[in-house]
Image (cartoon, rainbow, N blue to C red):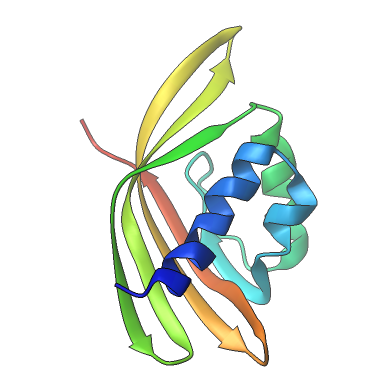
Length: 124
């Protein structure tokens, strides 16, 4: 497995766990598409990504990768998929959500960014 691509992917989890909206939003390409975990919206621009994460960060999330696979598509694109746990504040309690995730990362110039992201709650 390509360690560099794994480190790039881990940035999203690290940034979410630091709870800094701008750092998370910076990981997304300006044309990124996004199906978020806790919303039925289909997000298609940076402003909508920012708005989603502002609300999401208010829940004080902590995300952890449970299992994953990384598939290099070409030298400038890869897919990072798997299952994560998301702990959030809800009604003065911490709840845990199991979610499936898919990230498509692409290299443009010197910068890796997320061009598509899909999260969904694992059905029970």
